[in-house]
Image (cartoon, rainbow, N blue to C red; front, side):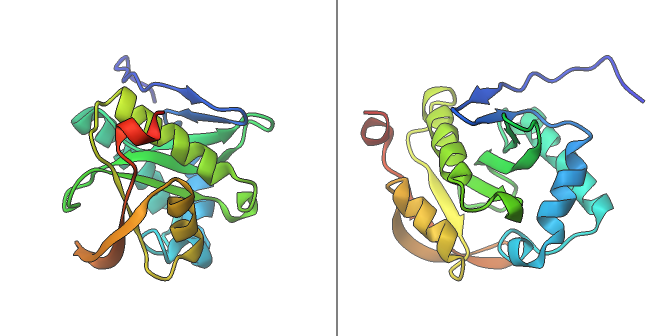
Length: 178
C-alpha cells in the first residue's frame, strides 16, 4: 500500500556511504541491528522484527515532526542498509544529539565515524545547530572512542528517560567546520 504523501529527506553522500531517508525494506536491516544483543544493549535493547519496523516508522515520523532525524546508512558498494546515524531528539532527551549505530558485520571499517562526521556537518550547516552532544552508554567503549575521534569531550553523566548515559560535547561549529 502506498500513498501520494511524500516527505523530503535529504541524502548525504560520503566517500563510501549514503545517509538517506528510510525505506520499508530497511526494517529487515534494522531488525538485524536491534536483534543482536551486543549491539542492542547500547541502543535501547533487543527488539522483535515488528518493533524494528515501528522504529523505522518512528524515524520517518521524527523527520515530519522535528524536521530532522537519524538517517538510514547505505553502503554505496553493496547498496546494503548498514545502520543509522544523524541528528536525534526524541521526547525526554535533554537536547538534540548526534547518534549512530551499525549492524555488527559492518563494525571496524570506519563507517560509523564517516557517518557521524557527515551528520555533525549536516546539523551545523543545514540545521543551524550551535552545539551538539552525543549520549554514550558508559560501557560502550567503541562509541566513546568514536565520540572522542570526532573531537567530543566527556561533559557529565545523566539519566535520560530510562537509562544512564555519558554526555559527550562535540566541538563547536567554528572548530568542527574549519
